[in-house]
Length: 364
Image (tube, rainbow, N blue to C red):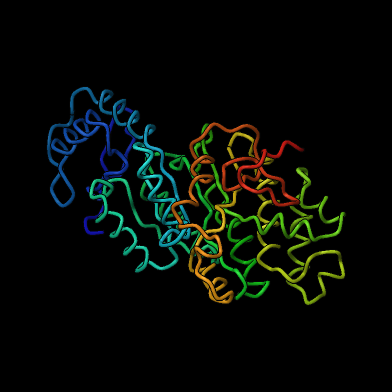
């Protein structure tokens, strides 16, 4: 990114923060905060310059108060799998609709992520101060840990720098093995949540897990016992982990009452169950899941090709139309927690499909 951050002391409490021109999103919109920080930089020096100057900078507490107000005002959101498709559309919708939002565009490929960031800034240059790339591969423990550490490094002045986390990265539809599908669509969600939970704002933080209507459709084909399992709001980690362990072992899942022919649907059903579990464990956060709808992406276009029709002819919608439910779960007024929502941003059941526009689900 160019210049390295430099540490400055701001306030009589001797607290420090790292400031860098490229990190303007931390203090992007408040003119008073910008002026106060500019004053501090003038007195203490800028990156690459000496920091000789007065030992006292006057009313430091005013600088701290102004800076703290600005930091708390920014709602910082991480979106994984965001260099294309639905993830990129979510990033654009957040930037376009929430003036106080700052987005970390998560991408497994740094090169593709940089291209996505550049494309958004070309479309709207004013977004440059509210957008950064974060390299993250949700299938890798090491990559996710590095990404969490990078967020701590960039925004270390705040103990809880994230307002929102959107777990969008996923694989499927039909080309992946059961193991690789679960590794990303289920364990990837868990891996990212566990790594970033400590960075979430405890008073207003929100986690949105992008799942799919394939999850409820999968559950509807399972035995009654498994339907109760996937719908159980009291599901325990040990039970979910036991199911995943069984999925990783060679056996006939259909013989156990599961619908074994649909790895994608199983992975999304498990992700919905994990959402309930996590919401119960962290009731101070808003943690929910949703389907974006039947969206034309690199994941779904091969299906359209196999059917001999265009995505539009098969009812697929453009990625921008898949942002309604994610944005509602990020910024809308919510009732309850650990729930699954349809693409129309209405609550939906976990064990059967609910068509958009029909009455919302009201069961347990």
